[in-house]
Image (cartoon, rainbow, N blue to C red; front, side):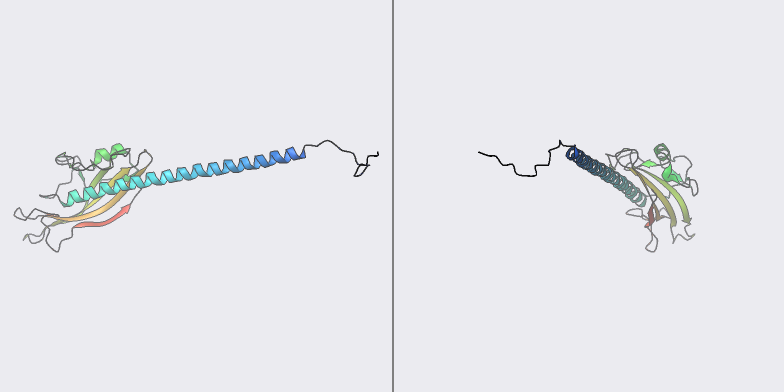
Length: 218
């Protein structure tokens, strides 16, 4: 019985030279690099989303503080508050030009020393609202008198004053800070007999009353 061998009788079998192993290592390295790149991108996207959330939280805190301060001023009864370099009866109203050119970059201690915590009536010290209780710092507002038109001598026109209100809010970290500014105008009774109830007490029908403008500083 004879045995036949198929194939080229002159061809010899050689051992593997490691090419398959090398290709496998290159493939695994490429997959590892792709995985690391995807992981780094996911981490970056997560940080960006977190930063945007902090910025939005700080902005909402500042907006709520600004709205509270505006409403408090527009509903305040009695004569117009005087400007004071120090707090007068609890209320600190700055004169025109007294504030620094860029208060949005001042520290929180400066804000709390020159202004008032939002939600607390500065005249009575009574808390009427809670603004952003989960923020890193409490929401604060500062007020400045920037312009006024005196009342007429016959008492037919009330005193009109333009105020600049600055509100500072923060997120859940010290890095998330937002500062918003608005200009508010309102009238003050020119005589003691003028009605002093309701929003903008003492304002005649033709007087300006309310927010005049606003902008985001930080």
